[in-house]
Length: 529
Image 1: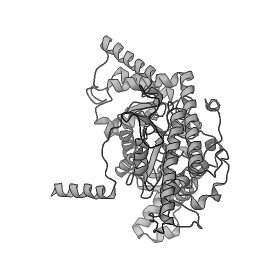
Image 2: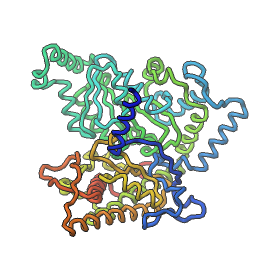
Image 3: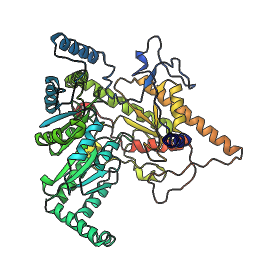
Image 4: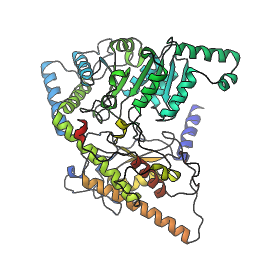
C-alpha cells in the first residue's frame, strides 16, 4: 500500500515536471582556472570542456570555497591541532554532553565579537537554528508576524510554536505590514463579526494584552531573499513597529541573514550591521554555508536567549555538535573576512560583477532600456512587468549595492538552463513547488572570482537563446499557426495590464527590466567599507 502511494506521488511530480533529483556538475569559479582551455563557453550553445562548468549557481558569493589561501589556512589549522592532540575527526556528541570543546567556545566568542553581538550559539545548520528559534522563543499568547516569503524552516518551526497567532504580511511591503499590525492591535469590526463569540473574545483579549505589553509580537524577515535577491526594507518595518508598539520589551525582530552575511557590512557582518540596526534586533541568524564557504549556523542574540535555546532548542540539544573540521573552516572564513585589504577586494569584485551581469542582461534582453538610467519611473513599465520590483523609498536601502542573486523568470526555465549548461555555465532551475506556479526561473548567483569575459559570454548566450525564441515565435505567426498560450502569471500587474500570450524571451525581458529598476547608480564599494 505504502509503496503504491509513494510511487503515485512521485509519478505525479514527474508528470508535472517538478520531480526533484540529485545531480553533480563539476564546476569552477572562472574559465581562467580551467587547465588547458581559455573558456568553456561558445555562442553556438556548446561547451569545449563539459567536465567543468563556470559557476553561476552556487551560494559561494565571495569565492572563498575555491580560495587557495583559505584552503592553506584550513590545512595548517587542522595539522596544528592534530599535532598537539587538540583536534578530533568528529565532535563525538551533543554540545551538552561530550561534543563541546574549546574550539567551539572560541569560535562562538569570535563570532559574537565579529558580528558585534552579546552572544552567539552554534547550530548544525540554518534550518536547525530557524526551527529551534521559532518553536521555542515565542511564548504562549504571543503573536508572530512574518514575511510571506520566509524560508521553509521558519514555517516548520512556527508549526511547533506555542504562539497564539501566526499571520503573514505581503512580501517586503511596509504598507501591508502596518495594516496587519494595526489589525492585530485593534481588530476590525468586520473580523470580529465573522467569528463566534468565544473566538471574538479571545481575539479582543489578545489585542489588549499586546497593547498593554503582556504578550510579545515577533516580526520574522530575511535580510536578502534567496529566490529573488531582493533586500528587506528593515528600517521601515522597524520604524512602523516602534510607532505602533512603543514598548521595546515586547516587540522583537528576528532576521535571517543567511544570504546577507558575507555580502553586506564592511567585513561581511550582514544587512543589519550595514544599516546600523543590529543593536535593535533581538535575534540575527548567520549561516556559514553560503558566503562563508562552510556549513553550520550561529544565532546572534543576548546571553539570556542563548541560555534559553541551549535548554529548550531541541535541534541543538538532541544533535551531535559541529565537527572540529567544520569549526576550523568557519574560523578560516573569518580570517579572510577580517583581512580588511583582501575582503575589500572581494566585495568590490562581487559588486562590480553583479553590476556587469545586470547591465549586460538588460542591454541584451531589453535593448530599449538605457542601462544607466536607473531613475526611470518603473510605473511606466509596470503594466508589462511580471514582477514589480521598484527602488525602495528608504534612502539607506536604495543606496545599497545589489545582491548577487539575479533571477531570470521564464516559462521555459528548464530549457534555458540546459542551453546555458551546454554552453559551459553552471546554472540551475527553481521550479514549483519551491517557488509558486508561474514563477519558475533560472537562478543566477554572482561570485567575486567570476571574470568579465565569462559574464560577457553568459550574457551573449542568453541573448542568443532569446533571439532564437523570438525567431521561432515570428515563424509561427508568419506561417499562420496559432501561437501557443502560456499559463497566466501570478505576478502583480497594473490594473490596465493587457493579458495575452508571452514568449520565454518576453518574460525574461520583463523580469530583468524589473530587476534593474531597483538598482542603485554605480558607486565605489569603498563608500561602505
